[in-house]
Image 1 (cartoon, helix red, strand yellow):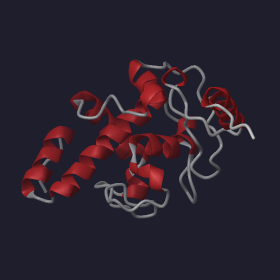
Image 2 (spheres, helix red, strand yellow):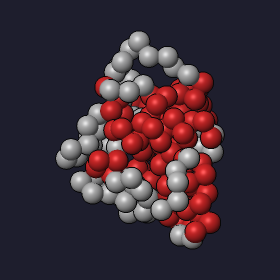
Image 3 (spheres, one colour):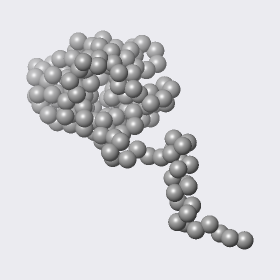
Image 4 (cartoon, one colour):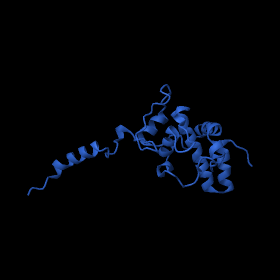
Length: 175
């Protein structure tokens, strides 16, 4: 009986995993974005005329939001959030029709990450959550997510200092 050598079986294993869709994406392929409801790959075909900014390129390559902590991006994201998001998710992100965006309970586990939140905002989700990728550019989505992160931080801080910091970043007045 002959035991296959690792040299010969490793390429076969990699090929099999690739054919089955189990191989992880390499850095040059970027991050794999999946529809939160179907787990089908997301085709970034909405709004084909939009500018793909360096921040969007970073999200596609790494799954990381380049706008986290960037003051102007957060202010821009707040304006979009107020216009498109707060009716369902409340001004503080605590949720009404839509779920809370500031706690650690997620219907879909991966929506606890910037990548996962980007996926659900881009293609939509269950219930009333529409595909905002049809309405706003990917760059705007990233800015909204950066703003939502400040709401999470303020909730976690739970103190006057945390709320003051969130107000300072967002330009809001005290209650």
